[in-house]
Length: 307
Image (cartoon, rainbow, N blue to C red; front, side):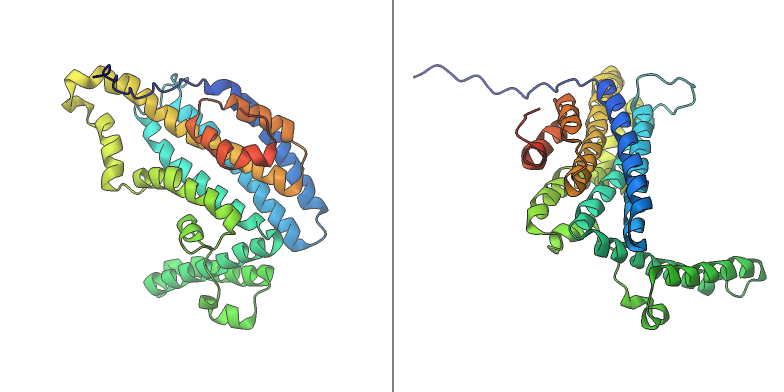
């Protein structure tokens, strides 16, 4: 008999210092947002200007979300008012960031027409919301001013989106903007993007959605922190290493979303930030979602340099 094989050990998680990449990402997104602002102003059509304004708002939103996440997951609370388990809110924020990334990848397949579809879909949701208020409170005088204002806003929205009389009279003729799961399941995204979006859906979006939707498995992943008093013998481990791993995982996903978003725009509009982004991906070495995203998509999109 040969020598016994040693059992495989679970690899130790790599500790990542997010501070250097956080500083660099803020600088990159400052420049990216300025570039999008300039393109929105110089766009030859209203539709294209609106499309770039969406991207600019998204860039500002994602950067703000990451800064918020870093505060929620930080080791130090400078103002002393952060709840003990504030980091448990991070997955819900990250889910919003992933929604933005899915929307952006799909929109960039056919930028201006898809942007128009995106904005037109908002009319249907506005109309349904107004109908909801009318049905519930339309007979109450206190709501009359509010409902009249919402009706005027809906009319203005129809004009801004260039809707037809048929679409205005029956908003059901307008499509909802697809969800991330629909983009993959219903094969709406192009095949070249669908592989990447499916990976995002399976390994990030599904995971954070379970926590955000308070599903049973999501509660199981967070309740241990909240019910730590039930496990006095494990309190030190839960509040120490386990909490650190939870924060690192979700800050890592959020960081990856920003890297993906910036890389998508850089490739779509040939912004010339290839070297800056390669450096950012290099700084992300050790963040598992970032390393996987690089292998699946962004190594080829940005060049052969390996982080």
